[in-house]
Length: 423
Image 1 (cartoon, rainbow, N blue to C red):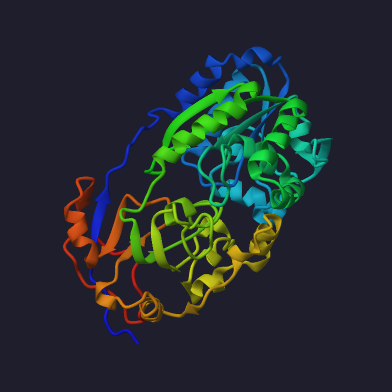
Image 2 (cartoon, rainbow, N blue to C red; image 1 turned 60 degrees about the horizontal axis):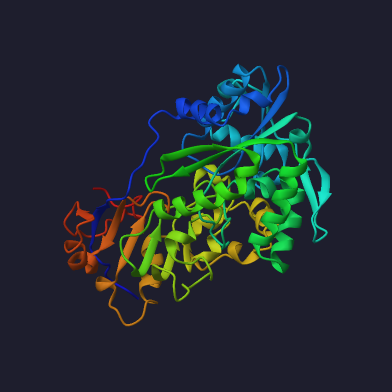
């Protein structure tokens, strides 16, 4: 077995950093710019969507949206729009929203998490279009969602406003049928087919697109009218792809990940960051970075036991498996028709055991010379702990600041590492 480990040093990356200075004021300005208040009559109910992703400032964004439409004379209500997450139950989804700070007390309006849907039409392919009854009961619907590259999907529309029309407002029933359709058709095709019908039949008043920068901050807010959603979703995706965080090096023997979770990414860890979007355990020819092994050390608290994405790793700690809620995880992956991402890899009780096995499986490279990157999660990669083998490359990079000298990995008496190395 491996007896030694690589020394590590910490680097800080420099990314493009557009940032919305005043979230509330920007939300009001964006909705005012498109003149959406003119379409609302006093007393009308406006349903505002709230999803399950860990979006920066989401509670404040929703609160500002509520305040804008209340000032226009409407009666706002927030509706959960998150497919099968939270176990596909009203109580489970309410817990998710509460953990994001999305409560009736903070946002100043009712928060509904009903799961019932109504079929409001069919697509040209014969697919029933499900629409949440809580949203359908409103006079208008405002779609609020983050736009970013999806962890498995390709094309002009991925995670964004169009997807919220399907998977979000379609609730669990809609998510099930749409994911089945993705097996036979491209997502791009289905999202347009269903999304256009939802815009036509679902009383969509407007949408608010959110794009985040590489520092997990609100980089841009853009309000759009229904007829602009499809085009703007495509445009914002291109911007989100440009701002996406990335790892500092294109090749590594081992990526050590402290935590995965649904609020981090739909697949627990962002495959656009790990380079495993197309396949579970290796990168496509045009994908980077190329990482031989991934090891997961924990689940986030906000994922509530949902370990979707664990199957993208080769190894994990036993505590990850013990924290996994199989029912919630399996509902999620079954709905997505993607069972392999819930498969449990070999797991070990301690970090020492995990590293011994992982570093013995990277090829002919001796463990002390292994190219290791160690991150908290795929959302927070501004600072990365790197194996000493990367040091010559780091010294040549103007976009990297070396924060520490290489030092030994520190294990406690139980053979466990801390949560990423201290500075």
